[in-house]
Length: 80
Image (cartoon, rainbow, N blue to C red; front, side, top):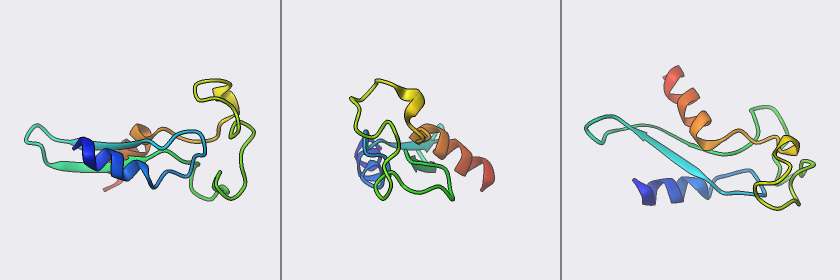
């Protein structure tokens, strides 16, 4: 699962961090996957950097528009 999360993280649309998440059930079956990035309909940070794009990871997080990989995975599993 860790290898899957690392691979999913490569799809990130955030310039600061490439993070992936894999949600599984008690039997190890994949329920959902997600990566960090901006909400749907907003310009990707790769195309139009947000105000926090050039700052050090973990600083000025209020300037970053990306949603966490874990949140994206939970939203996906909730709608499937």
